Length: 394
Image (cartoon, rainbow, N blue to C red):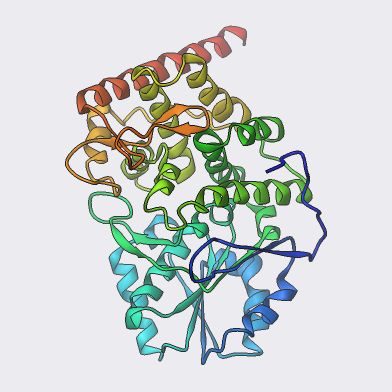
């Protein structure tokens, strides 16, 4: 992959990518490509369509597309709760029952217009109703466009952790229009870009170097730059998915930093984004790898440099999260393969450690606890020093 080659950018131009599934699920990509949507949709016969979104997204971008679709096929507008509140059994049950009541059939199409949580809810409902009906993903966030829609993993949260209940169910196609990213807040952009940073750390040091050169703490880009960045992050993940499209084997490396990150996210109960949680998780995972003698102190510092200085994820670690609480939250990790604590860990920049043949490494829980405690203490001292420096200057 040549990162110095800019995507041939043209407003309205659409490119088609493969997600490498045995049953094709085309990935359509471009900037301001809405006018092409009905042509693609016409390839899929349906009796009615259910358009799922959040109210603010509908007003911002969805209304135009909804009205165009409604002129050609019966289309129901369905609003869902915002954020993580969307990812619970009660919402899933209400969604499924509502679809049945409104006459959804095996010939119907569900459409998920929004971020990853909307996609998860709709994808899981589609996978459950009548043992599987069709749906389309239209991701509107950097995270959803470059990461979550590529995985085909649909899930809701349980009472003790994230994504405990779900299945694999791929959309019939994914529609990715980067025009939707232009109004996304900075923290949302960072949350998507951090997954691209992760891809560099786990599989492609050249991509990591590329990102170091193009990202900035304010995450400000022209429309062309933003489209090119999204495109390259997508390609970085597709390179991994070529080997394992459903992330059941080698693809587990995409969970780097996520065991810690999901624990942090769960403890914050929706008050911290997935991306920021994973940014902390990656730094803890790097500290663990160094302790195991796998990567150098310089490699660990590179995590801090890229995540904090280049990308701008530099908020303090939540003081209410203790090592004990995080260890308890990680017990419910959705990648569990037994009773042991197992993690995706770097062997070096661009390659993951694989001592047991499944890209997860078993680590002594007491060692993990010690690393978490050290990280929290180190982070607190680091932040105190920075705050003191600011105060001293002023």
